[in-house]
Amino acid sequence: MTCAIGTLANGASATITIVVTAPSNPTSLTNTATVTAAEFDPSTPNTASQTTTVNPAQQPDFSMSATPAALSVPAGLDAIYTISIAQLGGLTGQVALTCSGNPELSTCTIAPASVGLGAQPATATATVSTRASGTVPPVAPQPPLGTLRVVLAMLFGMLALAMLAGMARAARQRTWRGALVRLAALVVWSTLAWGCVSSSTGTPPGTYTISITGQQGSISHSTQVTLVVR
Image (tube, rainbow, N blue to C red):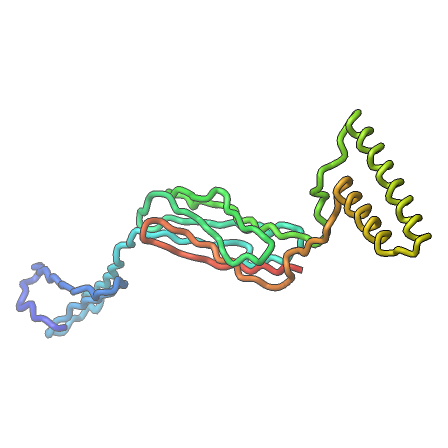
């Protein structure tokens, strides 16, 4: 764009105002204005030039990140990530944090579950707890204490002797079916009386993408980290 100022007397000044219409999408605008004269100027530094950059106002928002970007742990240990949430454009209030994408037989928790926005970035911790394969502790009732325990032990012994005697008679009579039934009953009684253990599978090995999401009103952002379970 070119405009004519006209003739200026020695030592006089003129003001030029440039009005720019900003685009619909916020962006930085840079304008440069240069003043020249038709007459010969023996002093080139007198040529005036001015550059102005206008940055759009930051909309209220927040940013978030998580470190480290990836962790590798054996099944049974925890993977711990640090989440950082920073205020942008003066946004205030609480940001609710959630996580998803953790593998089967594991849990993902964030503490605290929400953080407040302020001048300094807020932090939270995301913990993915994995499970090791192994055994589950006995879940059947445990032997009672004191006199009751002694009484039950005596009853158990008497029942066992009666079953063994019946098995002996059945063996002599070649009636193996009854003997097998009594033996099965003895095994079941032992299991119920003293508890049992069962095998349990752990968190499946593999590479997983954990997504951590922050929500404040209608504003939502997510960041991803990698978890490798060995």
